[in-house]
Length: 180
Image 1: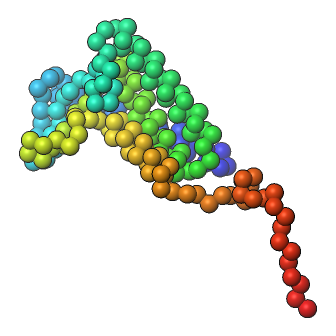
Image 2 (image 1 turned 135 degrees about the vertical axis):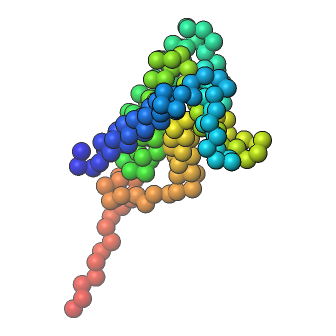
Image 3 (image 1 turned 180 degrees about the vertical axis):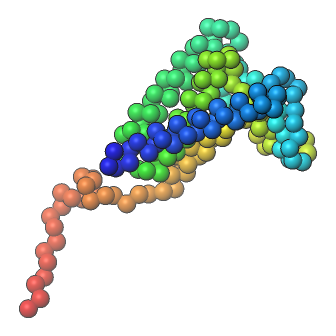
C-alpha cells in the first residue's frame, strides 16, 4: 500500500460507479430506455439508447444466451488479467491506464449480466457525421486507457530506477577522485 498499488483499484471502482450511475440516470431517470429514444442536449451531442449485444464496434454479437455468457466469461477473464497486470505494474501512469480499462470493463460486464447487452447512450455527432459509434462512460474509459498504454509503449521511455537490475548496476562503480 505504501507504493500506491491500491490507487488503481480506487480509480477502477470510481469509473465503474460513474458508468453505472450515468446509465441509470439516462435509462431510469430520463426514461431513454428503448430503441429510438432520444434527447437532444447540444447541436452535436444527444442521448440515444442503443443496446449493444457485441463488443467494441458491435463486433462478436452475442445473439444467443450461450454466446452472451461466453462473452461475459471472455471479458471477465480479460478483466482479471488486467487486474493482475495492474497489481504488478510498477509505473503509476500505466496503473492509471489499466484502472480505466478495468473499471470500464467491469461496468460493461455488469450490463451484459443484468440485461444481456451493454447500455450505450452517448451520441457525439457533427451534422450527420459521427466520429464514434454511440458509446458510454465505460467505453470511453477503456478507449482512453488503451490509448494511454499504446502511447506510453510507443513514445515514452522511463528512466531506469536505481533498484532496477537492468540499469547497469552490475558495472563497477566509478572511482571517486579525492580532493587534496
